Amino acid sequence: MSDMQKIQGKGIGRGIAVGRILFYKKVGRQVSRTYREDSDAEWKRFEDAKEKAQTQLLKLQEKVERAAGAENAAIFEAHRMMLLDDELNTFVKDIIRNAKVSAEYAVFVAGEHFSELLSGLEDEFLQARNADLQDVIWRLIRILNGVEDAQELTEPSIIVAEDLTPSETIQMDKSLILGFVTHLGSANSHTAILARQMSLPAVCGVAVDPSWNGKIAIVDGESGQILLNPDAALIEESRKKQQQEAAESERLQRLKGKPAITKDGRQIAVYANIGSVEEARGAIENDAEGIGLFRSEFLYLEGKDFPSEEKQFAAYKAVAQAMDGRIVVIRTLDLGADKQADYLDLGHEENPAMGYRAIRICLDRPEIFRTQLRAIYRASVYGNLAILFPMIISLEEVRLCKEYIAKVKAELKEAGIPYKEDVQIGVMIETPAAALISEVLAKEVDFFSIGTNDLAQYTLAIDRQNARMESQTDMRHPAVQELIRRTVANGHKAGIRVEICGELAADTTFTQTFLDYGVDALSVSAPFILAVKDAVMHTAS
Ligand code: PEP
Ligand code: MG
Image 1 (tube, rainbow, N blue to C red):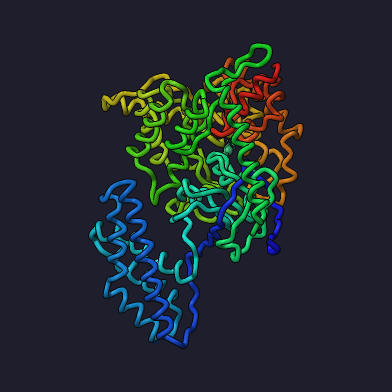
Image 2: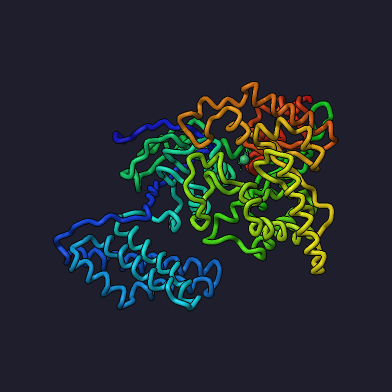
């Protein structure tokens, strides 16, 4: 085809995707007031949008009904009813006619108006309807803006977006995503990590264009190349590459069940990094010897409010049981920086990566921390759980964390709720401060887990989200390597084990170096486990 376009970006996930593009546009939470003379035309746009919304909601209702039963799908029926509400319709009509504004602005104003009314009510049930009303209002605004809703994908697609946040990514239907292409983002951003965990190709640093919506593309997650409107021969070639990759993963399958032992007989544990209960399945399928990092904050990004103790308990228990006695390291929430949820309302910060995040939030808001620790300890009796604290910079923080743990244990004991006494406690070494005081920290905990993503970010003073600076993020930089080496040495001096759970753990060009340092375990996204095992088996330590 003559209109083929070749675009070069940065490959951040592996594999190749071939398929149709869905351009994902965000709608800001503000709609500007636009003058429209032709009120009839605007009213017609509104009516059409309502019809489209009805169709979307009906599809969703059917999809959820099939997957989770009629009870869970009922909410979409309620949304459809809201669209028919007389008061809402009259309000929108009046604004369109009297103020001569666009349909989307009229809908926006209606949303604000009814939201104010609902939140002023005493009745909690009606107050709660406010969230549903907002869903309906923003669905209409998205439709009026011609924006596709990637959270409601209907066919397998390549998601193209200016930027994707972890919370947006996590809410999409994974079974319908073929790959990601974004303008913003970098190899160590959490969206890239999610793509790797889903075993999907991803490319960033691309000047994406909404006109790509609906076009066929080939996305190479390794080379970073994107082909728009490829001809049949190129599609065929990509299919062949997909087959070669499948053959390589077939070869690696044969390593399943075998321990990762170096040529000179040293055994290294290869664990999985996960962000959800579902991913534990992928960990098991890929032969993980345990979960080295459960990024629990993703539980907090899925919903519209903090996950309750029960919800967390259920998740930790499910993973503990699924792993059947193998270790499961649950990292306490690491929200903040790029991991934001609307309900968190953390406020604006000039440098959120160096701001109010992770353990700093937990120590500042004990009710959040306590809920999570209770859930973890309650789940501890169902398997082999361990706790990991993120973003530690001082001994005091570790001691405070341990005090919280002691309090939670005492509470559970008092209430007669079973828990395990000897849950292992670890800290992430992901700040230069923690690495430099690792000798002191090692005496306080049972294990270290080195987070190379943040450790490199803070050591090199290069924002891991900043695509422009990415080429200068040198993981071989002697400062980064020295901090890793020192952490392992200090950990071993105190007799504790040291793991690496940052993305670098999956880079097999580093396996020899890490084994030379004496690292005990490597924790990687599930699709990389067998390749890392293979690398360990080809290495002498
Ligand atoms: C890290 O910083 O290396 C790490 C594993 O944590 P996260 O990527 O979730 O910040
Ligand atoms: Mg980190």
